[in-house]
Image (cartoon, rainbow, N blue to C red):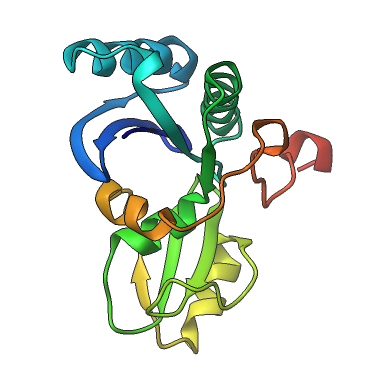
Length: 193
């Protein structure tokens, strides 16, 4: 069974190929606002290098945000299109949950993804269960937020695809038509900020 993993929420595009739940190949590329140029090429390359076509794929896992507004939309759109046209299951995981799952700690975890103005935040227990709703805080509010918190702070972009697969293994797949990007903060231009 082959699983295609797609992550475009950050400046690093990650494409992974798993066979029976074990990572057999992974490609990463830093892309400054060119995710649409590289993502499909990376998928095509990883399949060709493993002597596969899309017809061998049995499921897709996609990181559906939060993160780069356009980046997330590109990854989700590609994943939905492939899942629908190949008639295969699709599973989603948020970027914050994917990072929490990738780091094993025997305590609560505060997972953050930074942008220029602030941080996306996910607070998880040691078993990666979300303890508070995802939120976005401006940098000054974030500093206040963490003052009284005793949490292990994760500000990493390293994804462990084997752990993510294992975490999602018994999760129900989703109809590709209802897979959507997750946005936590509003669009600054629409908020007059």
